[in-house]
Length: 593
Ligand code: ADP
Ligand code: MG
Image (cartoon, rainbow, N blue to C red; front, side):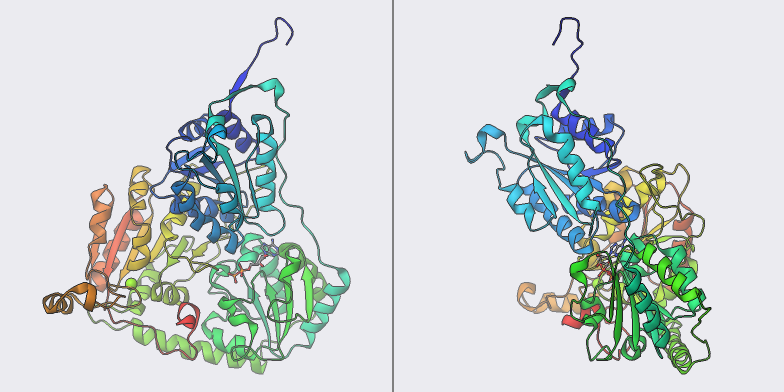
């Protein structure tokens, strides 16, 4: 330094925070403690919103939901050892779902490594299985470029989790700003088009289809393909089926949606345009007995390695879904081709939809107390605002809720989040659930993330509705305190059947307790009958409702939906033996039982 130069010293914590902010990471969820308290404080000082959570798993679920909802990763901040290990569940869930997230873990001081330091653990190695990229910066000077690489890697190619390990002694160590190379914000992922020849081939395969089907997966939601996709479906006249998280890209009440004839559509389609969905367990591997063995799949994905998993595609279109759908649209429009609405395939699908609707309706209109799942969802779906974000988890709760709780496209907010104009507002994805990994306990973290994003718009935003099984709720139940602390107006509906899959009624439970030691005789699926989850919410200042009847359900939900000041929890007691209607094939969570 020359005499007269002003030194500006930065701590490691400030450098991490500034680097994240420079990369447009706007939200951080975490639990602080030694050695990372200063990182959270520096993040706030840098203009990053910090949400303190109650368990690192839920913090990581929240941070990854920000990534899915905005296209830019959220950060999850955790302490060393056990803190980081709790976050692994969230990283695995994000990586399996292909959602971007940055996890930052404090760790032992550099001079104490392998010495048996407090909460010492091989964190970088541990994270490797759960991430795309796992690294420990070796000096303060490299932090900006390491953060840029982590953020870029989390978003580019197939999105996923990235881990940055911060040695405890680096948090308060100082460096002069002049020593730091400025690393600018990494742009949104480059968009690639599919090969022209392959697009032409796909169009000709589609045109020869007798029983075509478009499957819309969460890749399509992530790619914000809603506008192009609507045009494709409406111009081509093709029927479409959303996967669980593909719901809401196009509205569930769209005339071309055949979700209510799901099994039939999958089984008999002869050509499937697969948009951002893997042929994994969620789609029964694309194989018989659930699919036609000769089905021709036109597979669209940005991950080349995904092509051909379980089924060799007739045509592989490598590229961004939004871009590829636009290409397909041009090919289809060229000669004005349209799949007729009077075909045998359409009438078969329409008949099946009508028949299924009738069965659900019969179950929904039962007015017995305790209620069944169909009755609950029927009334909930009537009252929910059309532009709400639905979060759902549980076994029956999620499976049945998926068929009965509709998503409608929020038309007024479709802008893609870009680096140039970061709005923080979720755009297309409007449905989040247990996902590819079937993770239970994600709901409250997702809801906190979605509600935080909605609030950041400065207006009321969209309503976040979290439909939980009682078992699923339990995994992260303490996060209701987080919701109360930040006044996040989430509406939680716990569909309470006293157990995992099913439970017993209070009287049976009391009888069992008299008969002997419950640890020997209580069915492992049971939970405490009529547990007062509503009082858990009330304990922290939120609003709790105990609900047994249709009238109570409707009035509690109406009240919750008008309350923008605090979260609400409806504890909906249903028949502990209520089940799904008879299925042609058992599927989703039940498929592996
Ligand atoms: P679902 O749960 O709806 O079945 P999956 O998570 O199985 O969806 O599949 C999503 C797929 O979408 C992944 O294979 C992922 O690589 C792909 N994908 C994600 N984003 C995009 C995008 N922008 N363009 C194309 N493919 C994408
Ligand atoms: Mg249950």
